[in-house]
Length: 348
Image (cartoon, rainbow, N blue to C red; front, top):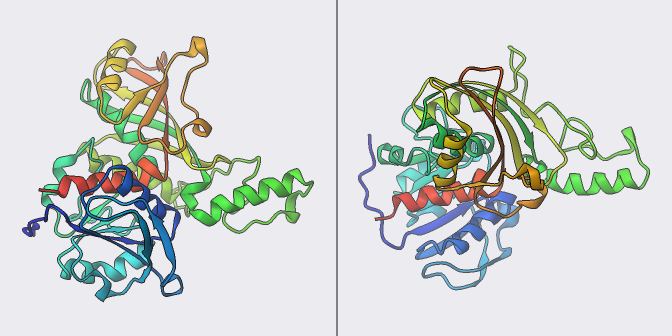
């Protein structure tokens, strides 16, 4: 089934999970892009109902405060677009109500990404996939999104056969409590606390001054679910059998993910041709001048929209190999911005 409801020019937008880190970023992005909303509803759990959250305004919605409403099936009546970042279990529980209300759910969780009737969309990479949705469109995993933009720029020049990637993922990927833990634990560590004295709850181990090669659960083959997501999501987004070998690591940066990417192509691609393709690609900024110590760094790019690429060079161990380093804001392009850009594709 494909969706045949016509989207109004000024849709009613619901933000589900409005008080969370990504939910708050949804609000920022709606304002920054001046999304033409006729109404914006802030939805969250019952314990957050009644709270006031600031909103800069967009479309026909003036700047001011939004009152958080409890997320119930009835809360989606009259909604056209529902931006979800409330966790997979909530998305699954609310899917039927959202679709029955005539709204399109754009979901940031992993709940529906690999379902056959749910498009998995990065607007710069596979925008046409929104045409066959049946009420739900999935936002890919943040690490996959950030890698996919430079890969698409290069794939259009020479088809990609294999990718080896190591991720350096910020605390923000584990949510607002994890970001707070990075702050608090760093202060504890600098205050002289060590080991068991540190407050550890959001992560499996100490995150301050440490790297943890463990994101999500471990699978039988020794990989993690986060790594599995990069493997299967890349194939679905590109509609191509691209082999991906990832290692995902949590690092003590706040909200930008970085990735070291080694790509193998079907035919040779020069650094010059790759650079030109990346520079011309929407959503990618090349920041690559090693002689002047210019390259993307997570601590410098918080709050930005693009994926930044640097350290571009040939891989001398492969006949058709290229290496690069990329950085993207996990909350922004890796989540909220990508979702709102999907919503823009739905506009008449």
